[in-house]
Length: 124
Image (tube, rainbow, N blue to C red; front, side, top):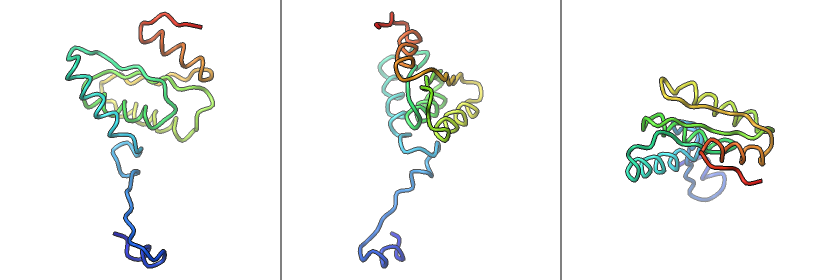
């Protein structure tokens, strides 16, 4: 509890510090749960490909690194510089795992590239 803040607002206040997670992003749990379920359901899975603008990609990169799964993140152009920096920082911590961050055109380009990387024939 935060007593000084509680006094200021006149109510009990609890603060959840999402910036203190391993990635500094709030979605780290989602990536961890997803990769764990993916490994349990498909033990031979070699990689994950996802299009994202930030927190989700950081989460997948962190979880993939922990699980020994390669991760490719497709990032649309025009992304927030802070979010892109977070993705690149997570890639630099990959230590032997492949975490690729691919900067594309807009959202449509990212979607098409995502399909190609996942081994599907894109639909235009």
